[in-house]
Image (cartoon, rainbow over all chains, first blue to last red; front, side):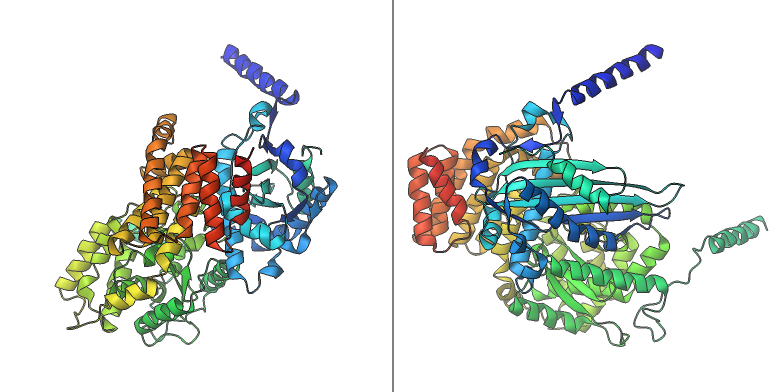
Length: 223
Length: 415
């Protein structure tokens, strides 16, 4: 028994060592991204797809709509700030909700792009953490679906994001956690050029959300 | 004596646990008290929020002619004596899956995927009437009060994965989409059939609806939409036939079926739905729908092209095609299955090419066929053919949506 426990400890230590040595990552990068990076100058942030569920003891779980609205309203601004910091020109008014009024078809395209990104995550994040060498050879695409949005916003790239949060409010301390995934999409090909996934096991509103977005872009490739 | 004591004990337990709530009466009862109880108010509020989200996400189809048609059919089915504070209204949801659902504030939602599978207006009437019956019988409220919550809690996760549920579905309504269980669904079938008969439709053809559903095997594991918790389509077909034969539902002599009117109303939806299937990576379904529609209009170049698109997509994305099959068969996506689809790439390419050529044979000016041929050539690494066919597509297609994508591919062939 003791030997088995020691084995587990050794395995954990090995994983931790690999993690700390920077050989594994949560980011994903298309091998063509370094070459294409220069061509992606202007980007637009697609309205995020946010789901936050409040778990209750009775099982009468419900969407925390107030929290969903708050996170969905703040995320584009936070993401835009990070993108500017990395040298992109961000077209803020490109794809915000106000522009969709009276354009249900365009809004539907946006929903399709969000869903395509969600679907792509099945392959993208089969494993949350993978070896960096493998992560930098990630080839996933949303295809020509993105062209209409990129045309509409007159940009070279789109930034899509999904956030899923949970909040549990019984059994002593409140527990919460969220996972935020962000992807930079080539406006021509729909290729996912770069993506990252960040997990928070604490506050994911307020400063917590700021931290998550900052953390997602921390390893964004330099120009 | 002992049994009596036990009964009293159980009743006391139920009372103390708050489960002994009075059973809600149908909305047609004069004393229904619709919207009075707090839990029902919450359901109505949640239903309105879901509807708002569906609209906001552009998931409600904007097709005025089809909308008017569905509303006209639906209006005939609403029973008299409804409370004044409920307004039934009908939404066509841009979802390729075969499903319909209802919300407590009176929204009756039907997926485009279901509309394209129906044969006639009488069948549409049953779908709408079934959902109206859920609202009239207050099944949402009964469900919440009867608390099948644990099962539903598991389902909401599936719905989130499936897409539509992403940020949309409140827990009590997950059952509206996945099904309530045998007894409740049978009640909705019975009450729905009565509404259909009262509206003057010929109910004898209606059970055929369930047989039509069986023609297409829906993926059950993730895409848990169409009546997955409902009794099987065969059981429902049998049940509804028995209701009609036993006289439980009156048969109107010379009742309406309106097959022609229905087909003409939904004619434009088939192409839209196949495109939705392709976008959802449901390649095999897209192919089935295209082939099914081609049986009716075999010379349609668009349907021939879309059949080619389904084959090409399977060649381009063998893992996605393997995943679709795994979901349909409720099996694990393993390497063997993916390899099988990879090995099939040449065959899929050949099928795609043949389908695009058939589209051109039907209409030599059909620009999308050149798009398909160009993309197939690109898959095969044939730069000359890629440039030639995609060039033709851009020249003949006018202001196409995917111009940027196509230009990039052409540019890549020059490298």
